[in-house]
Amino acid sequence: MIGRAPRWIPLVVGLLSIVWAVPIVGILALAFRPPQDVVLGWWQLDPLRFTLDAWVKVWNGTPLADAFWVTMQAAGISTALTMILTPMAAYAFHYLKFPLRRSLLIVIINAFVLPPQAIIIPLFLLWRDVGLLDNLWSVIIPYVGMSFAWSIFLVKNFLEDFPREMIEAARVDGCGPLSTFFYVVLPNLVTPISTVAILQFLWCWNSLLLPVIFLRTNIPLPQLLTRLSGTYESNFDQRAVAAIVTTAVPLLVFLIFQRQFTAGSLNRSGAKE
Amino acid sequence: MTQSAARVVSANVDGAESREPTGSRRKPVAGGWDRAEIVAALILLTPALVLFAVAVLYPLADTIRLSFFDVKGLAAPKYAGLGNYFKLFADPTFRNTIAVTLLFTLTTTALTVGIGWVLAVLCALAPRETLFFRFVFFTAFGISDAVAGYMWITFFRPDQAGTLNAFLNAIGLGQLQHSWLGDPATAIWAIIATATWSGVGLPLLICFASAQSISKSIIEAAHVDGARPLSIMRHIIMPLSLPGVRVALFINLLGSLRAFDVIYVLTQGGPVRSTETLGFFMFKESFAQFKLGYGAAATVVLLIAVLIISVPAIAQRTAGAK
Image (cartoon, rainbow over all chains, first blue to last red; front, side, top):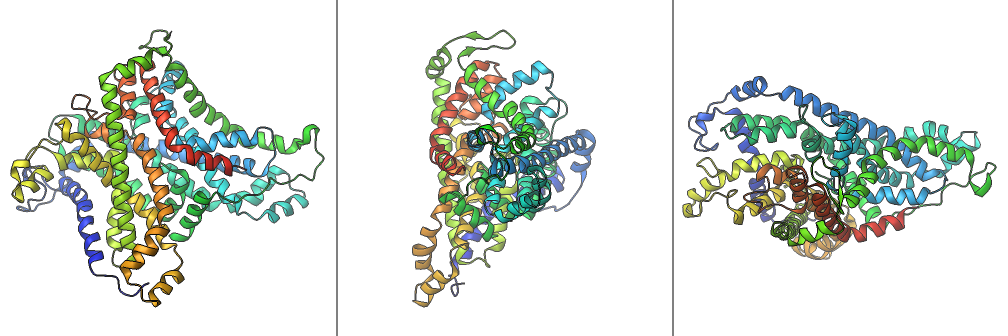
Protein backbone atom coordinates (compact mmCIF):
# COMPACT_ATOMS: atom_id res chain seq x y z
CA MET A 1 0.00 0.00 0.00
CA ILE A 2 2.94 2.35 0.44
CA GLY A 3 5.34 1.25 -2.19
CA ARG A 4 7.79 -1.47 -1.23
CA ALA A 5 8.31 -2.20 2.43
CA PRO A 6 11.92 -2.61 3.58
CA ARG A 7 13.22 -6.18 3.20
CA TRP A 8 14.20 -6.51 6.85
CA ILE A 9 10.60 -6.36 8.02
CA PRO A 10 9.50 -9.80 6.85
CA LEU A 11 12.92 -11.08 7.94
CA VAL A 12 12.54 -9.89 11.55
CA VAL A 13 8.93 -11.04 11.78
CA GLY A 14 9.90 -14.37 10.24
CA LEU A 15 12.78 -14.97 12.66
CA LEU A 16 10.55 -14.25 15.64
CA SER A 17 7.84 -16.53 14.29
CA ILE A 18 10.36 -19.40 14.38
CA VAL A 19 10.40 -19.11 18.19
CA TRP A 20 6.61 -19.35 18.09
CA ALA A 21 6.67 -22.33 15.72
CA VAL A 22 9.24 -24.46 17.59
CA PRO A 23 6.94 -25.81 20.36
CA ILE A 24 4.23 -26.54 17.78
CA VAL A 25 6.61 -28.53 15.57
CA GLY A 26 7.97 -30.23 18.68
CA ILE A 27 4.61 -31.53 19.79
CA LEU A 28 3.79 -32.83 16.32
CA ALA A 29 7.14 -34.64 16.21
CA LEU A 30 6.60 -36.19 19.65
CA ALA A 31 3.14 -37.43 18.68
CA PHE A 32 4.14 -39.08 15.41
CA ARG A 33 7.65 -40.42 16.05
CA PRO A 34 8.57 -43.54 18.06
CA PRO A 35 9.70 -42.61 21.59
CA GLN A 36 13.06 -44.39 21.27
CA ASP A 37 13.96 -42.13 18.31
CA VAL A 38 13.43 -38.92 20.26
CA VAL A 39 15.16 -39.79 23.55
CA LEU A 40 17.82 -37.24 22.67
CA GLY A 41 15.25 -34.69 21.50
CA TRP A 42 12.48 -34.52 18.92
CA TRP A 43 14.77 -32.62 16.52
CA GLN A 44 17.17 -35.59 16.07
CA LEU A 45 16.37 -36.67 12.52
CA ASP A 46 18.32 -39.93 12.41
CA PRO A 47 16.47 -42.23 12.04
CA LEU A 48 13.40 -40.46 10.73
CA ARG A 49 10.49 -42.85 11.25
CA PHE A 50 6.83 -42.20 11.85
CA THR A 51 4.32 -44.21 13.82
CA LEU A 52 0.79 -44.03 15.16
CA ASP A 53 1.60 -46.17 18.20
CA ALA A 54 1.05 -43.34 20.67
CA TRP A 55 -2.38 -42.65 19.15
CA VAL A 56 -3.37 -46.29 19.54
CA LYS A 57 -2.06 -46.38 23.12
CA VAL A 58 -3.93 -43.22 24.09
CA TRP A 59 -7.10 -44.46 22.40
CA ASN A 60 -6.96 -47.81 24.23
CA GLY A 61 -5.39 -46.77 27.52
CA THR A 62 -7.10 -43.50 28.41
CA PRO A 63 -10.72 -42.30 28.37
CA LEU A 64 -9.90 -39.94 25.48
CA ALA A 65 -13.10 -40.59 23.54
CA ASP A 66 -15.19 -40.12 26.69
CA ALA A 67 -13.42 -36.84 27.46
CA PHE A 68 -14.01 -35.68 23.89
CA TRP A 69 -17.70 -36.43 24.23
CA VAL A 70 -17.91 -34.71 27.63
CA THR A 71 -16.20 -31.63 26.21
CA MET A 72 -18.52 -31.59 23.21
CA GLN A 73 -21.56 -31.77 25.49
CA ALA A 74 -20.38 -29.11 27.93
CA ALA A 75 -19.28 -26.67 25.24
CA GLY A 76 -22.21 -27.49 22.95
CA ILE A 77 -24.99 -27.14 25.54
CA SER A 78 -23.45 -23.98 27.03
CA THR A 79 -23.08 -22.42 23.60
CA ALA A 80 -26.63 -23.28 22.59
CA LEU A 81 -28.10 -21.86 25.79
CA THR A 82 -26.10 -18.65 25.50
CA MET A 83 -27.12 -18.32 21.83
CA ILE A 84 -30.80 -18.62 22.72
CA LEU A 85 -30.96 -16.55 25.89
CA THR A 86 -28.63 -13.67 24.99
CA PRO A 87 -30.63 -12.14 22.11
CA MET A 88 -33.82 -12.35 24.18
CA ALA A 89 -32.21 -10.42 27.02
CA ALA A 90 -30.40 -7.94 24.77
CA TYR A 91 -33.64 -7.14 22.95
CA ALA A 92 -35.50 -6.58 26.22
CA PHE A 93 -32.76 -4.31 27.53
CA HIS A 94 -32.57 -2.33 24.31
CA TYR A 95 -36.20 -1.82 23.28
CA LEU A 96 -38.46 -2.44 26.25
CA LYS A 97 -39.20 -0.18 29.18
CA PHE A 98 -39.47 -1.83 32.56
CA PRO A 99 -38.55 -1.00 36.16
CA LEU A 100 -34.86 -1.34 37.15
CA ARG A 101 -33.89 -1.75 33.49
CA ARG A 102 -30.80 0.42 33.55
CA SER A 103 -29.56 -0.77 36.97
CA LEU A 104 -29.81 -4.42 35.93
CA LEU A 105 -28.06 -3.67 32.67
CA ILE A 106 -25.18 -1.88 34.40
CA VAL A 107 -24.68 -4.74 36.85
CA ILE A 108 -24.69 -7.38 34.12
CA ILE A 109 -22.42 -5.71 31.56
CA ASN A 110 -19.84 -4.73 34.17
CA ALA A 111 -19.58 -8.28 35.52
CA PHE A 112 -17.29 -9.10 32.59
CA VAL A 113 -14.31 -8.01 34.71
CA LEU A 114 -14.97 -10.76 37.28
CA PRO A 115 -12.49 -13.63 37.24
CA PRO A 116 -13.99 -17.13 37.57
CA GLN A 117 -12.13 -17.38 40.88
CA ALA A 118 -14.67 -14.94 42.34
CA ILE A 119 -17.51 -17.46 42.12
CA ILE A 120 -16.03 -20.92 42.61
CA ILE A 121 -15.98 -21.23 46.40
CA PRO A 122 -19.72 -20.56 46.99
CA LEU A 123 -20.65 -22.54 43.88
CA PHE A 124 -18.65 -25.49 45.17
CA LEU A 125 -20.56 -25.38 48.47
CA LEU A 126 -23.87 -24.94 46.64
CA TRP A 127 -23.27 -27.81 44.22
CA ARG A 128 -22.17 -30.01 47.13
CA ASP A 129 -25.39 -29.24 49.04
CA VAL A 130 -27.69 -29.88 46.08
CA GLY A 131 -25.68 -32.88 44.87
CA LEU A 132 -24.57 -31.40 41.58
CA LEU A 133 -20.84 -32.07 42.01
CA ASP A 134 -19.44 -34.28 39.26
CA ASN A 135 -22.49 -33.47 37.17
CA LEU A 136 -21.99 -31.73 33.83
CA TRP A 137 -24.50 -29.04 34.77
CA SER A 138 -22.17 -27.90 37.56
CA VAL A 139 -19.98 -26.37 34.86
CA ILE A 140 -22.65 -25.57 32.26
CA ILE A 141 -24.62 -23.29 34.60
CA PRO A 142 -21.64 -21.01 35.41
CA TYR A 143 -20.46 -21.13 31.78
CA VAL A 144 -23.83 -19.76 30.65
CA GLY A 145 -24.40 -17.44 33.60
CA MET A 146 -21.00 -15.79 33.25
CA SER A 147 -21.33 -15.45 29.49
CA PHE A 148 -24.17 -12.91 29.76
CA ALA A 149 -21.74 -10.34 31.15
CA TRP A 150 -20.13 -9.95 27.72
CA SER A 151 -22.66 -11.51 25.34
CA ILE A 152 -25.56 -9.18 26.19
CA PHE A 153 -23.25 -6.18 25.80
CA LEU A 154 -22.06 -7.48 22.43
CA VAL A 155 -25.54 -8.07 21.00
CA LYS A 156 -26.91 -4.84 22.46
CA ASN A 157 -24.05 -2.92 20.82
CA PHE A 158 -25.10 -4.44 17.51
CA LEU A 159 -28.68 -3.32 18.13
CA GLU A 160 -27.48 0.30 18.39
CA ASP A 161 -27.12 0.22 14.60
CA PHE A 162 -30.40 -1.59 14.01
CA PRO A 163 -32.83 0.66 12.09
CA ARG A 164 -35.44 1.91 14.53
CA GLU A 165 -37.86 2.50 11.64
CA MET A 166 -38.31 -1.27 11.34
CA ILE A 167 -39.34 -1.52 14.98
CA GLU A 168 -41.75 1.38 14.54
CA ALA A 169 -43.19 -0.13 11.35
CA ALA A 170 -43.76 -3.46 13.09
CA ARG A 171 -45.50 -1.68 15.94
CA VAL A 172 -47.76 0.28 13.61
CA ASP A 173 -48.64 -2.97 11.84
CA GLY A 174 -49.80 -4.38 15.17
CA CYS A 175 -46.81 -6.38 16.36
CA GLY A 176 -46.52 -6.72 20.13
CA PRO A 177 -43.10 -6.64 21.82
CA LEU A 178 -42.67 -10.41 21.62
CA SER A 179 -43.62 -10.82 17.98
CA THR A 180 -41.46 -7.83 17.08
CA PHE A 181 -38.57 -9.71 18.65
CA PHE A 182 -39.26 -13.03 16.94
CA TYR A 183 -40.23 -11.79 13.49
CA VAL A 184 -38.34 -8.52 13.05
CA VAL A 185 -35.25 -8.40 15.25
CA LEU A 186 -34.16 -12.02 15.73
CA PRO A 187 -33.83 -12.86 11.99
CA ASN A 188 -31.39 -9.95 11.67
CA LEU A 189 -29.17 -10.98 14.56
CA VAL A 190 -27.30 -13.81 12.83
CA THR A 191 -23.97 -11.90 12.84
CA PRO A 192 -23.70 -11.05 16.54
CA ILE A 193 -25.20 -14.38 17.61
CA SER A 194 -22.58 -16.31 15.64
CA THR A 195 -19.85 -14.15 17.17
CA VAL A 196 -21.20 -14.90 20.63
CA ALA A 197 -21.39 -18.60 19.78
CA ILE A 198 -17.76 -18.77 18.65
CA LEU A 199 -16.39 -16.98 21.72
CA GLN A 200 -18.52 -19.03 24.07
CA PHE A 201 -17.62 -22.32 22.41
CA LEU A 202 -13.87 -21.59 22.57
CA TRP A 203 -14.05 -20.46 26.18
CA CYS A 204 -16.05 -23.47 27.36
CA TRP A 205 -13.97 -25.99 25.44
CA ASN A 206 -10.66 -24.67 26.81
CA SER A 207 -11.83 -24.02 30.34
CA LEU A 208 -9.85 -25.81 33.04
CA LEU A 209 -10.49 -24.19 36.44
CA LEU A 210 -14.21 -25.00 36.78
CA PRO A 211 -13.93 -28.66 35.72
CA VAL A 212 -10.91 -29.19 38.00
CA ILE A 213 -13.05 -28.15 40.97
CA PHE A 214 -16.49 -29.47 40.05
CA LEU A 215 -15.86 -32.66 38.05
CA ARG A 216 -14.22 -35.94 39.07
CA THR A 217 -15.15 -38.86 36.85
CA ASN A 218 -16.60 -37.45 33.64
CA ILE A 219 -13.87 -34.99 32.80
CA PRO A 220 -13.31 -32.82 29.71
CA LEU A 221 -10.19 -32.91 27.55
CA PRO A 222 -8.00 -30.20 29.16
CA GLN A 223 -8.46 -31.88 32.54
CA LEU A 224 -7.62 -35.30 31.08
CA LEU A 225 -4.45 -33.78 29.64
CA THR A 226 -3.37 -32.47 33.02
CA ARG A 227 -4.01 -35.89 34.57
CA LEU A 228 -1.84 -37.56 31.91
CA SER A 229 0.92 -35.00 32.50
CA GLY A 230 0.65 -35.46 36.24
CA THR A 231 1.94 -39.02 36.14
CA TYR A 232 5.65 -39.55 36.57
CA GLU A 233 6.15 -42.14 33.85
CA SER A 234 7.76 -40.85 30.74
CA ASN A 235 4.75 -40.87 28.43
CA PHE A 236 5.65 -37.79 26.44
CA ASP A 237 4.37 -39.31 23.20
CA GLN A 238 0.94 -40.00 24.68
CA ARG A 239 0.74 -36.58 26.26
CA ALA A 240 1.52 -35.02 22.89
CA VAL A 241 -1.34 -36.94 21.30
CA ALA A 242 -3.73 -35.85 24.05
CA ALA A 243 -2.56 -32.25 23.64
CA ILE A 244 -3.25 -32.32 19.90
CA VAL A 245 -6.69 -33.87 20.38
CA THR A 246 -7.50 -31.33 23.11
CA THR A 247 -6.67 -28.32 21.03
CA ALA A 248 -7.56 -29.39 17.48
CA VAL A 249 -11.23 -28.42 17.49
CA PRO A 250 -10.96 -24.99 19.17
CA LEU A 251 -7.85 -24.16 17.14
CA LEU A 252 -9.68 -24.86 13.88
CA VAL A 253 -12.72 -22.89 15.02
CA PHE A 254 -10.49 -19.98 15.97
CA LEU A 255 -8.48 -19.96 12.74
CA ILE A 256 -11.60 -20.24 10.56
CA PHE A 257 -13.63 -17.60 12.40
CA GLN A 258 -10.79 -15.21 13.22
CA ARG A 259 -12.71 -12.21 11.92
CA GLN A 260 -15.69 -12.75 14.22
CA PHE A 261 -13.31 -13.53 17.05
CA THR A 262 -11.50 -10.21 16.72
CA ALA A 263 -14.69 -8.21 16.57
CA GLY A 264 -16.13 -10.05 19.52
CA SER A 265 -13.13 -10.29 21.81
CA LEU A 266 -12.70 -6.54 21.79
CA ASN A 267 -16.11 -6.35 23.33
CA ARG A 268 -15.90 -9.13 25.78
CA SER A 269 -12.35 -8.69 27.12
CA GLY A 270 -10.27 -11.33 28.84
CA ALA A 271 -10.80 -13.13 25.61
CA LYS A 272 -8.82 -16.25 26.16
CA GLU A 273 -8.97 -18.46 29.20
CA MET B 1 -11.05 -8.57 8.87
CA THR B 2 -10.61 -4.96 9.75
CA GLN B 3 -13.96 -3.35 9.13
CA SER B 4 -16.05 -5.00 11.78
CA ALA B 5 -13.19 -5.01 14.26
CA ALA B 6 -12.55 -1.33 13.75
CA ARG B 7 -16.20 -0.58 14.31
CA VAL B 8 -16.13 -2.35 17.63
CA VAL B 9 -12.79 -0.77 18.60
CA SER B 10 -14.19 2.68 18.06
CA ALA B 11 -17.44 1.76 19.77
CA ASN B 12 -15.46 0.45 22.69
CA VAL B 13 -13.00 3.32 22.91
CA ASP B 14 -15.22 6.28 22.28
CA GLY B 15 -18.38 4.96 23.90
CA ALA B 16 -21.14 3.93 21.54
CA GLU B 17 -23.80 6.34 20.46
CA SER B 18 -27.22 5.27 21.53
CA ARG B 19 -30.77 6.39 21.47
CA GLU B 20 -33.61 6.58 23.91
CA PRO B 21 -35.67 3.44 24.38
CA THR B 22 -38.66 3.40 22.08
CA GLY B 23 -41.56 5.49 23.30
CA SER B 24 -44.78 3.57 23.62
CA ARG B 25 -47.91 4.28 21.65
CA ARG B 26 -50.15 2.14 23.82
CA LYS B 27 -52.02 3.28 26.86
CA PRO B 28 -49.57 3.60 29.74
CA VAL B 29 -50.48 2.05 33.08
CA ALA B 30 -49.77 3.79 36.36
CA GLY B 31 -46.21 5.11 36.61
CA GLY B 32 -45.74 5.45 32.85
CA TRP B 33 -45.03 1.75 32.24
CA ASP B 34 -46.64 -0.25 29.48
CA ARG B 35 -47.94 -3.50 30.94
CA ALA B 36 -47.42 -5.44 27.69
CA GLU B 37 -43.79 -4.37 27.59
CA ILE B 38 -43.19 -5.32 31.21
CA VAL B 39 -44.73 -8.76 30.66
CA ALA B 40 -42.65 -9.26 27.50
CA ALA B 41 -39.50 -8.15 29.31
CA LEU B 42 -40.23 -10.61 32.12
CA ILE B 43 -40.68 -13.47 29.68
CA LEU B 44 -37.54 -12.63 27.71
CA LEU B 45 -35.29 -11.81 30.66
CA THR B 46 -36.20 -14.29 33.38
CA PRO B 47 -34.07 -17.22 32.19
CA ALA B 48 -30.96 -15.09 31.74
CA LEU B 49 -31.48 -13.26 35.03
CA VAL B 50 -32.01 -16.47 37.00
CA LEU B 51 -28.84 -18.04 35.59
CA PHE B 52 -26.88 -14.85 36.13
CA ALA B 53 -28.07 -14.60 39.73
CA VAL B 54 -27.23 -18.24 40.50
CA ALA B 55 -23.87 -18.30 38.73
CA VAL B 56 -22.55 -14.78 39.36
CA LEU B 57 -24.43 -12.53 41.80
CA TYR B 58 -25.05 -15.02 44.59
CA PRO B 59 -21.52 -16.55 44.50
CA LEU B 60 -19.90 -13.13 44.32
CA ALA B 61 -21.77 -11.88 47.38
CA ASP B 62 -21.17 -15.14 49.21
CA THR B 63 -17.42 -15.04 48.49
CA ILE B 64 -17.28 -11.67 50.21
CA ARG B 65 -19.41 -12.95 53.12
CA LEU B 66 -17.31 -16.12 53.54
CA SER B 67 -14.12 -14.06 53.69
CA PHE B 68 -15.23 -12.97 57.17
CA PHE B 69 -15.78 -16.56 58.31
CA ASP B 70 -13.62 -19.43 59.37
CA VAL B 71 -14.73 -22.27 57.09
CA LYS B 72 -12.85 -25.53 57.29
CA GLY B 73 -14.02 -28.58 55.41
CA LEU B 74 -17.51 -29.70 56.38
CA ALA B 75 -17.74 -27.90 59.75
CA ALA B 76 -20.17 -25.01 60.19
CA PRO B 77 -18.66 -21.58 59.40
CA LYS B 78 -17.50 -19.57 62.42
CA TYR B 79 -17.57 -15.76 62.28
CA ALA B 80 -14.01 -14.47 62.32
CA GLY B 81 -14.31 -10.77 61.56
CA LEU B 82 -11.21 -9.54 59.80
CA GLY B 83 -9.27 -12.54 61.11
CA ASN B 84 -8.67 -14.05 57.67
CA TYR B 85 -7.29 -10.78 56.36
CA PHE B 86 -4.92 -10.34 59.30
CA LYS B 87 -3.73 -13.90 58.83
CA LEU B 88 -3.26 -13.31 55.11
CA PHE B 89 -0.96 -10.38 55.51
CA ALA B 90 1.03 -12.14 58.21
CA ASP B 91 1.43 -15.20 55.96
CA PRO B 92 4.85 -15.20 54.20
CA THR B 93 3.45 -17.43 51.44
CA PHE B 94 0.74 -14.88 50.73
CA ARG B 95 3.21 -11.99 50.72
CA ASN B 96 5.31 -13.89 48.23
CA THR B 97 2.12 -14.51 46.25
CA ILE B 98 1.49 -10.76 46.02
CA ALA B 99 5.04 -10.21 44.73
CA VAL B 100 4.69 -13.04 42.21
CA THR B 101 1.30 -11.72 41.08
CA LEU B 102 2.74 -8.26 40.44
CA LEU B 103 5.77 -9.65 38.63
CA PHE B 104 3.75 -12.08 36.54
CA THR B 105 0.92 -9.68 35.68
CA LEU B 106 3.07 -6.68 34.79
CA THR B 107 5.83 -8.55 32.97
CA THR B 108 3.51 -10.79 30.99
CA THR B 109 1.33 -7.86 29.97
CA ALA B 110 4.29 -5.68 29.01
CA LEU B 111 5.93 -8.45 26.98
CA THR B 112 2.75 -9.66 25.34
CA VAL B 113 1.42 -6.26 24.33
CA GLY B 114 4.88 -4.88 23.51
CA ILE B 115 5.82 -7.72 21.18
CA GLY B 116 2.31 -7.88 19.74
CA TRP B 117 2.21 -4.16 19.01
CA VAL B 118 5.67 -4.03 17.38
CA LEU B 119 4.76 -7.06 15.28
CA ALA B 120 1.45 -5.47 14.30
CA VAL B 121 3.12 -2.23 13.19
CA LEU B 122 5.74 -4.14 11.21
CA CYS B 123 3.12 -6.39 9.64
CA ALA B 124 1.01 -3.37 8.71
CA LEU B 125 3.91 -2.15 6.57
CA ALA B 126 4.30 -5.47 4.80
CA PRO B 127 0.92 -7.21 5.13
CA ARG B 128 1.36 -9.58 2.21
CA GLU B 129 4.91 -10.71 2.96
CA THR B 130 4.11 -11.45 6.61
CA LEU B 131 0.83 -13.30 6.06
CA PHE B 132 2.24 -16.73 6.86
CA PHE B 133 4.16 -15.49 9.92
CA ARG B 134 1.03 -13.91 11.32
CA PHE B 135 -0.66 -17.26 10.87
CA VAL B 136 2.00 -18.83 13.14
CA PHE B 137 1.36 -16.29 15.93
CA PHE B 138 -2.39 -16.72 15.60
CA THR B 139 -2.04 -20.51 15.75
CA ALA B 140 -0.09 -20.17 19.00
CA PHE B 141 -2.87 -17.96 20.33
CA GLY B 142 -5.56 -20.41 19.22
CA ILE B 143 -3.95 -23.12 21.36
CA SER B 144 -5.48 -23.11 24.82
CA ASP B 145 -3.43 -22.21 27.89
CA ALA B 146 -3.49 -25.73 29.27
CA VAL B 147 -2.12 -27.22 26.05
CA ALA B 148 0.42 -24.41 25.68
CA GLY B 149 1.60 -25.17 29.19
CA TYR B 150 2.06 -28.82 28.30
CA MET B 151 4.00 -27.90 25.14
CA TRP B 152 6.36 -25.72 27.13
CA ILE B 153 6.97 -28.46 29.71
CA THR B 154 8.70 -30.37 26.94
CA PHE B 155 10.61 -27.19 26.05
CA PHE B 156 11.90 -26.70 29.63
CA ARG B 157 12.52 -30.39 30.42
CA PRO B 158 15.71 -30.78 32.43
CA ASP B 159 16.94 -33.90 30.57
CA GLN B 160 18.70 -34.15 27.21
CA ALA B 161 15.40 -34.00 25.34
CA GLY B 162 14.61 -30.56 26.74
CA THR B 163 14.66 -28.12 23.83
CA LEU B 164 16.10 -25.16 25.72
CA ASN B 165 18.94 -27.07 27.36
CA ALA B 166 19.87 -28.78 24.11
CA PHE B 167 19.85 -25.43 22.33
CA LEU B 168 22.13 -23.86 24.96
CA ASN B 169 24.45 -26.84 24.64
CA ALA B 170 24.50 -26.53 20.86
CA ILE B 171 25.53 -22.89 20.88
CA GLY B 172 28.30 -23.52 23.40
CA LEU B 173 26.52 -22.29 26.51
CA GLY B 174 26.24 -25.76 28.03
CA GLN B 175 27.17 -24.44 31.47
CA LEU B 176 23.84 -22.55 31.52
CA GLN B 177 21.82 -25.79 31.37
CA HIS B 178 19.31 -25.80 34.14
CA SER B 179 16.31 -27.43 35.70
CA TRP B 180 14.18 -24.47 34.65
CA LEU B 181 10.91 -25.52 36.26
CA GLY B 182 12.55 -26.99 39.36
CA ASP B 183 14.25 -23.80 40.52
CA PRO B 184 12.10 -21.09 42.16
CA ALA B 185 14.25 -18.37 40.59
CA THR B 186 13.63 -19.53 37.01
CA ALA B 187 10.23 -21.27 37.26
CA ILE B 188 8.26 -18.02 37.33
CA TRP B 189 10.11 -16.80 34.24
CA ALA B 190 9.29 -20.04 32.48
CA ILE B 191 5.62 -19.37 33.25
CA ILE B 192 5.92 -15.78 32.02
CA ALA B 193 7.54 -17.01 28.78
CA THR B 194 4.75 -19.53 28.25
CA ALA B 195 2.01 -16.98 28.91
CA THR B 196 3.67 -14.52 26.55
CA TRP B 197 4.04 -17.12 23.82
CA SER B 198 0.42 -18.04 24.12
CA GLY B 199 -0.87 -14.45 24.38
CA VAL B 200 0.95 -12.43 21.71
CA GLY B 201 -1.61 -13.29 19.05
CA LEU B 202 -4.32 -11.16 20.68
CA PRO B 203 -2.54 -7.76 20.77
CA LEU B 204 -1.21 -8.58 17.31
CA LEU B 205 -4.77 -9.22 16.13
CA ILE B 206 -6.16 -6.08 17.78
CA CYS B 207 -3.33 -3.69 16.90
CA PHE B 208 -3.05 -5.03 13.36
CA ALA B 209 -6.77 -4.48 12.92
CA SER B 210 -6.56 -0.93 14.22
CA ALA B 211 -3.49 -0.25 12.02
CA GLN B 212 -5.31 -1.66 8.99
CA SER B 213 -8.28 0.58 9.70
CA ILE B 214 -6.16 3.72 9.26
CA SER B 215 -7.54 5.42 6.19
CA LYS B 216 -5.52 4.50 3.11
CA SER B 217 -5.68 8.09 1.90
CA ILE B 218 -3.68 9.35 4.89
CA ILE B 219 -0.93 6.85 4.21
CA GLU B 220 -0.98 7.48 0.47
CA ALA B 221 -0.82 11.23 1.03
CA ALA B 222 2.23 10.77 3.25
CA HIS B 223 3.76 8.51 0.64
CA VAL B 224 3.14 11.03 -2.14
CA ASP B 225 4.69 13.73 0.01
CA GLY B 226 7.83 11.63 0.14
CA ALA B 227 7.58 9.97 3.56
CA ARG B 228 9.64 6.79 3.79
CA PRO B 229 8.02 3.59 5.10
CA LEU B 230 9.80 3.93 8.43
CA SER B 231 8.61 7.47 9.06
CA ILE B 232 5.10 6.45 8.01
CA MET B 233 5.43 3.74 10.66
CA ARG B 234 6.78 6.13 13.29
CA HIS B 235 4.46 9.06 12.68
CA ILE B 236 1.24 7.55 11.37
CA ILE B 237 0.83 3.86 12.13
CA MET B 238 2.26 3.83 15.65
CA PRO B 239 0.27 6.76 17.07
CA LEU B 240 -2.94 5.81 15.28
CA SER B 241 -2.82 2.23 16.54
CA LEU B 242 -2.60 3.36 20.17
CA PRO B 243 -6.34 2.87 20.88
CA GLY B 244 -5.80 -0.79 20.02
CA VAL B 245 -2.85 -0.93 22.41
CA ARG B 246 -5.00 0.45 25.20
CA VAL B 247 -7.67 -2.21 24.68
CA ALA B 248 -5.00 -4.91 24.48
CA LEU B 249 -3.31 -3.72 27.68
CA PHE B 250 -6.56 -3.89 29.59
CA ILE B 251 -7.52 -7.31 28.24
CA ASN B 252 -4.08 -8.68 29.08
CA LEU B 253 -4.01 -7.25 32.60
CA LEU B 254 -7.40 -8.84 33.31
CA GLY B 255 -6.29 -12.10 31.75
CA SER B 256 -3.00 -12.28 33.69
CA LEU B 257 -4.69 -11.56 37.00
CA ARG B 258 -7.04 -14.50 36.52
CA ALA B 259 -4.30 -16.80 35.18
CA PHE B 260 -4.71 -20.33 36.44
CA ASP B 261 -4.22 -22.88 33.66
CA VAL B 262 -0.60 -22.12 32.80
CA ILE B 263 0.52 -22.32 36.42
CA TYR B 264 -1.56 -25.43 37.14
CA VAL B 265 -0.02 -27.26 34.19
CA LEU B 266 3.59 -26.04 34.42
CA THR B 267 4.40 -26.01 38.13
CA GLN B 268 1.25 -26.54 40.24
CA GLY B 269 2.45 -23.41 42.05
CA GLY B 270 5.76 -25.02 43.05
CA PRO B 271 8.54 -25.53 43.75
CA VAL B 272 7.60 -24.86 47.38
CA ARG B 273 4.73 -22.50 46.45
CA SER B 274 7.09 -20.03 44.80
CA THR B 275 5.09 -19.55 41.58
CA GLU B 276 1.59 -18.94 42.91
CA THR B 277 -0.31 -15.86 41.82
CA LEU B 278 -3.44 -14.67 43.66
CA GLY B 279 -5.68 -16.58 41.28
CA PHE B 280 -3.79 -19.78 42.04
CA PHE B 281 -3.25 -19.16 45.78
CA MET B 282 -7.00 -18.95 46.38
CA PHE B 283 -7.43 -22.27 44.57
CA LYS B 284 -4.70 -23.94 46.61
CA GLU B 285 -5.97 -22.67 49.97
CA SER B 286 -9.63 -23.38 49.17
CA PHE B 287 -9.46 -26.69 47.37
CA ALA B 288 -6.20 -28.33 48.45
CA GLN B 289 -6.16 -27.18 52.09
CA PHE B 290 -9.96 -26.71 52.25
CA LYS B 291 -9.60 -23.43 54.10
CA LEU B 292 -12.54 -21.90 52.24
CA GLY B 293 -12.84 -18.71 54.31
CA TYR B 294 -9.14 -18.04 53.98
CA GLY B 295 -9.31 -18.68 50.24
CA ALA B 296 -12.32 -16.35 50.00
CA ALA B 297 -10.34 -13.57 51.68
CA ALA B 298 -7.53 -14.02 49.14
CA THR B 299 -10.18 -13.90 46.39
CA VAL B 300 -11.43 -10.58 47.74
CA VAL B 301 -7.88 -9.21 47.50
CA LEU B 302 -7.81 -10.45 43.89
CA LEU B 303 -11.17 -8.76 43.26
CA ILE B 304 -9.86 -5.46 44.59
CA ALA B 305 -6.90 -5.65 42.21
CA VAL B 306 -9.28 -6.44 39.33
CA LEU B 307 -11.54 -3.53 40.24
CA ILE B 308 -8.63 -1.08 40.42
CA ILE B 309 -7.49 -1.80 36.86
CA SER B 310 -11.11 -1.91 35.63
CA VAL B 311 -12.21 1.53 36.86
CA PRO B 312 -11.93 3.24 33.43
CA ALA B 313 -13.67 0.37 31.64
CA ILE B 314 -16.47 0.21 34.19
CA ALA B 315 -16.97 3.99 34.10
CA GLN B 316 -17.16 3.88 30.32
CA ARG B 317 -19.62 1.00 30.18
CA THR B 318 -21.79 2.51 32.88
CA ALA B 319 -21.92 5.87 31.11
CA GLY B 320 -22.67 4.12 27.81
CA ALA B 321 -25.49 1.97 29.26
CA LYS B 322 -28.60 3.63 27.96
